[in-house]
Length: 394
Ligand code: FAD
Image 1 (cartoon, rainbow, N blue to C red):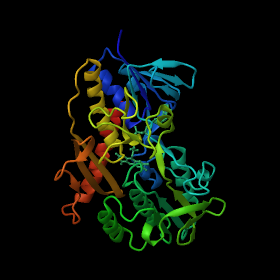
Image 2: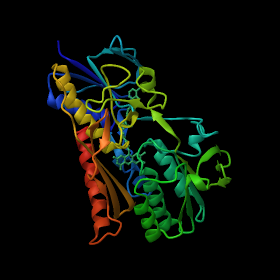
Image 3: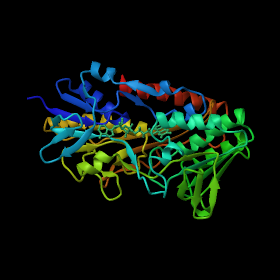
Image 4: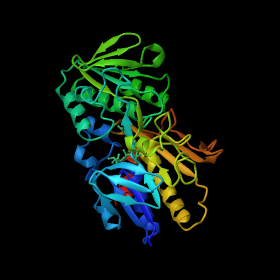
């Protein structure tokens, strides 16, 4: 009969994989399992916090995938049986597969920060899965008095979207400067360095002098506990009381990955670097944030690129052929203001069982921008977003 591929998770990795599989091999039987009828994109959700976008501009349906011949099962995967090659669904059905693709994104390590659990996230939103959390954080910012202290906490590596916390700090400052100019933002960080650091810090000095204070690990940046009742964040060095608190907790692969036996002790999923097949369970391919992808960061750009590579490899594997060695690209744009963008790009290829950085390829925006480059990069960021959501959701 027809070869069957099941895809768990309809985000940037999973939806792209399903669409690409159907495009490359229309006779394949492709089922996407995703509980939400509407996907809310994290990329550009920091602009929602700054009132530059509305949340519905972040939302996409699965009609494009259905139109492309993908069967969409609107439910959760609850268990994977790697031996029987089946996926149990929350709606009671069970799907058989020849190959399984998993792109379940992240879950949070609740309790890694004492006091930060799901209930605390209603008071101190993470907004690291876009949607209701994004809207909650925006509402809290809007309700804050001018002069209030916004406290953010960023996790140690690895985590979803390495430049994301710093883009968020920038865009919150952008909004504060206009609407609550006496306010300040304290960014407590569980590490001593971050993505595009000099570009961000130079931009903050230029655009928001004195507004953003970044506290690295070595100066007491690591938040060890929180008290949601008083919006207090406690570090190894002392406590900070916030008017608005945004806690971005440590993360791991989406829970179904551990259930399926494809996550290791780190909480993330090791894969080989050609078809992204799990090194722990055969015939299961893991994409995007959930996977350990060597030098590649956890980004929507990366998940989309990995999904296209994986789909092409699966078509070959299902035909009994060997997949081709891929070369992958990632670019992460960040906005520091509505018209101020920066980027980092990398190129990756398999090397010694991992996806390794190709030396000399890629790079970051220049530290000194001439000829309106920052404005241009903000436009590139917006073009990138429109392209990626069109590729992913149709
Ligand atoms: P996701 O997109 O999270 O998709 C996972 C899907 O799996 C979800 O729809 C979920 O419902 C589903 N799922 C989970 N468990 C199950 C289950 N058991 N059964 C069925 N379905 C399940 N990246 C960029 O490239 N550029 C950016 O500018 C950018 N900005 C960002 C800004 C912020 C604030 C944040 C938080 C992230 C940003 N990212 C950005 C990162 C990007 O959002 C992620 O890297 C990307 O979403 C990863 O795709 P994914 O497919 O791995 O996971």
